[in-house]
Length: 136
Image 1 (spheres, helix red, strand yellow):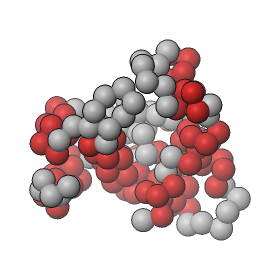
Image 2 (cartoon, one colour; image 1 turned 120 degrees about the vertical axis):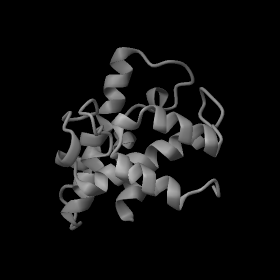
Image 3 (cartoon, one colour; image 1 turned 30 degrees about the vertical axis):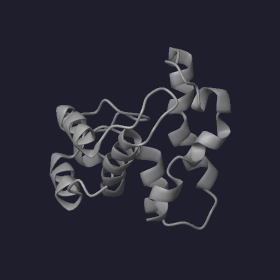
Image 4 (cartoon, one colour; image 1 turned 90 degrees about the horizontal axis):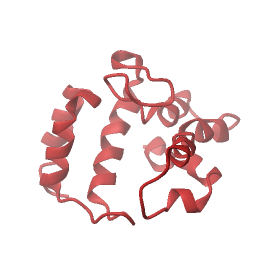
């Protein structure tokens, strides 16, 4: 839905050099990129949007095992919509060319995501790939 279309809106508040940097980010640069979830949440807080959109934007980089950001919440603490967005955003990032690497194939992306399955809601991950069988 709408949250998926604007989930990275906070990146507009981060220096383009950092967001589009072709090489490995420094720890400081990565820390700035991590702020895009809270920056995005702040950008939309005064808009008349469903609170679900706000929560999805804020938490779309939380990992199911608690290793994500910005709050390191885990499992059922992560809103439903953010868990779904975490999977689709990761998949999209993997199958898209980046300045620092070419796109992965569907099969490679699936393998990589299952190798880090602990980061995702495993039930949602299974449904995602069942609904998305190599047709992308």
